[in-house]
Image (cartoon, rainbow, N blue to C red; front, top):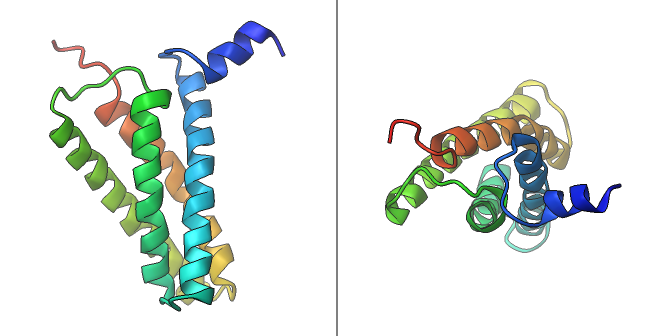
Amino acid sequence: MNGNLLNKMFRGNTNLIVVQFFRYFCSGGLAFLVDKTLFVVTHYYTLHLNKYWATSVGFVAGIIITYLLSIFWVFDERRMKNTIVEVLIFVVIGIVGLGLMNLFMWIFADKMAIPDDFVCNLLSTALVTLWNFLAKKYILFTKDTKQ
């Protein structure tokens, strides 16, 4: 791989959607590891939370990680000038994502009767990832062209 391309993928500002998606995928990978670790620990080992609460705990931790990485590494344009408004919108996008996560958990675990909650959680995550990226990219992290 070309050193310049490698540099663009990991360092510096970029507005290339391919690079941003790659970075989002990497930051999402870290959030995924934290999310799934918390799901497994809180559902199976420590707190024995039900699958929905355990999904929520992991998902919230993942949102925090993706917000911080989104503002510092993934996206270099920000639509919101007010950080509080930006965080609130980010949280709303996350809540919609969490709702989708739990909806898909219910579909896979309860309606389709997939017996392994972790597999259901993984399938749900795959479906929600695209929503999260596109919503964050186009609602929060694309320059407002009307200004």
